[in-house]
Image (cartoon, rainbow, N blue to C red):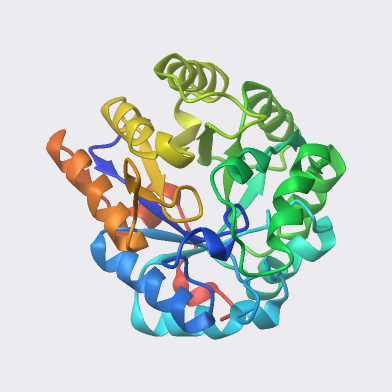
Length: 309
């Protein structure tokens, strides 16, 4: 399963952080396209994308919001485009699925279980918000479940079955690995599985080194050589988790969706800065970063010529 070439995924912009929290979070289609291309130039083989309303910054899962930056990224970069089906916890699964069903990307994210998704502790660190929706969105996470039922997961898998889209399978806890095994047993997911282990979200597994090791041990036991492992650490856990996993033979994900920071108390100036930091760690361990062509081979992707954008 391990490779000397490490795939860096960059999660360019997402629904976790609100625009007021960092002036560097890309919001408009042009900002998202520029940020994705900058991340690719810094070494990201895959860019993971959400869309936002350009005026308010609120997460927007309409295909019309994705189309402008998808076309620009494809024209200017060979990176693998990964579109979210996670969207935001406030959206229905039908709404979340629309961009992937429309554009048929090489990769799409897929959350492997319903969970508490606690963002409200951020209110203790951020007091001033630009938009009316931001504070209630964070406050609401105290009593909100991020819904990803067996029926929801099956719906996404079967809806995309004919598109050739592979999934970045997001596992926030050990039970999510067993849920993936369930869908593998049913023949709805084919190897190689791209398992993204998520650490440090309130409601999911922690970010201790033992948590990282436990995730990998369990995935090794369940999937053997049939999966490719990647990790992301939320917030201040980002680079420590990257370092641990890269040393264990894993792939990594960074980006402003997962963390706004580049160091203690210092906001990252761009997604590219985080990619560059991850690249230093990887190359410092004597490993190589994967190119988009490498990522396509490692994950057995269909190729950029077979997407609908």
